[in-house]
Length: 243
Image (tube, rainbow, N blue to C red; front, side, top):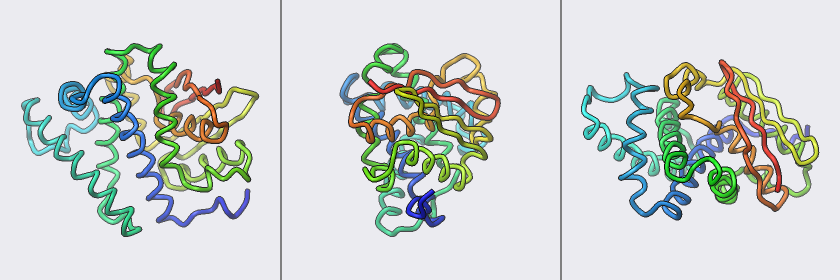
């Protein structure tokens, strides 16, 4: 692996946070485009309450009513956007925590469930993820967009930095023709898989697979489809296809 793929720890942390924020921003852009300008307030935040209660029951300040929690979550999202902008400007991840990334996961799953309920699986696979890949590519580290590296090298680099960052303990990617696999295990967020939200299949697509799909789309210069994410006890296996 080229030394150009080796990043400093602080840079890795920044890029990991930016990629998660990229997923959220991409969902927001596509949701506004397909569902309407009030998609966050009318659809996502109420669903986000469900995921926060599933994944983070200890985090919020004793709020019991859904309305109160919706307001708190809206403030969190606005504040977190500002934190990420400041981190980008200062080059420091100080003040960004894993707890806040858990909240981002809840927001991402809130958008996902909105799309499943309103648009259906087919629209997500055939259109939504193509648009998300286009938008998310803008958040990718520059070395993952370098045309001098092969797709396999880029995916290996991606697997390395999510592992080295500590988000997963194991990551593997495989390129076989127009089919790509992104597999992770020991994910820092794997307790999600024990929740009712997962057991009831309200969660369908792994963010690690979504990021992998964006890398493939940027490299190939054409649309990709995240066909499926198989959730394991502590990880996932995502299958990606180029179009």
